[in-house]
Image (cartoon, rainbow over all chains, first blue to last red; front, top):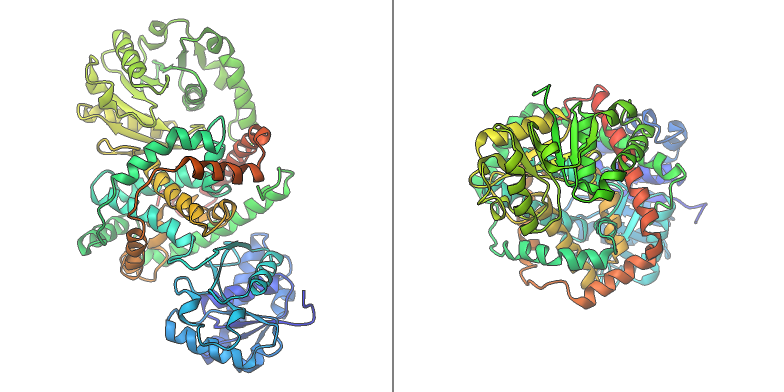
Length: 320
Length: 320
């Protein structure tokens, strides 16, 4: 779509530069703007390094041609003017999001759609007074978006259906996995699902039922395996002879009872956080965090390559 | 350990036959007993087919020698006598578990430990009156145990520390990933973590925030990727510049607020279950469930091979 027009990326920190890779990898010309001059100056080097990493895992073919599609702009106007889509990834603060949304509107083409990468602020909190607010919505990626394909699309009450559909089509076209959050809700879908699991994990740790390391093991050597290629509904659908209804009738009462045992609500205490910190530092000293993040990113790349191979390998339709 | 003695597998349905593969793959002689004569008669064929599948994914080397270590016994006494470890995987019903635990005790060597595969019944509900009850505990696998390594060890109040340690050592030795649930709790760790995520997923679906398919996508193309090689604690530890304490201080309030928005407790209604069933049948017709289960198992095998390769590939210590 819009083959002669480009995509604008506004804000080029970790998230924005990741988006630049996603769109350029998908064949689009990308104009990137960041207020910070140093970020603008180093952007192409940053992106080139990430692309070489991806290439070494077989995840992109031609680093140079992808890089050639990424252009750094010196002004917001240069980046946004004539773009058919704008991805905004500035600082996660309501006033900052509000200001940039209004500034983008000044240069926005009459048919362009604007997606915000916000992970937690609903669009209605910062686009209410934005001109053309019907073309603004949340398009929330997971970091880094070129390795983790899910993207949450969350319309504000005034976002038009057409804008949602165009953002959805673009995300599908560039190989992401867009999901529609039909109306605003705190934490959207992904962080709500992560949040409830974390809450139970912290509670089990706090009450001494298991070590943090054993709770991690339960996920990485158990629950997380299926969830890396099937969602929770498909998992339980395949886990009872008669499918999901059969499963829900058998195990619903157990899960209800588990939920009923966790009615007490309290924030994670300073003491609890200190204990979790201590448990993690026993396993991974603070000065090894950065190295371990590199390991995580390589594992994500290897997993992405593995999943792509599986999807291509004559398996039944991956989209099930 | 106990190199001249065997392991007994009691109950040889899906779970028990999976355990036979785990122990025989780990180099142990395994004596299998099931009350059902047809299961006894077909066991070696069932296991041979599973082993050939594993071999085709590079997950076992020598099908014949593994198979040669699996022996079918015609009586419980034959299987249990002289075994140094007994894995019980009979029907998931309290009275059945109680009876078999007592029957096993009649033939149990003086130093043998008995693990029950129960996924939900605490050991204290069925071993209170069992002779040698200090040597009984829950050793709960995920199906199939030869592909999903996590095993939950749950001592009853009377289980001796030594018995737990011996079961733990055996599980590590045969390549499983044992976790210690320090005292009994409904759903143990794995099903509690799965349960809270399912509860939120069902609620989001019920309230129309997202389709079941989009909720699945959020996990399989998002959350589930990291969780297939890191647990939830390691994930958040690496997800904030200053580690888990930094993360908890930044995001704790959001997760608390999400939890506070789900205080109302209701079982999954018949209507809700029917809607979920309908949503799943739109994606996967009932007559394709069995084929899709085959797909799932092949994906699990491919993922197991992928993870083994990653662990062996000069990456930093996998046990972190």
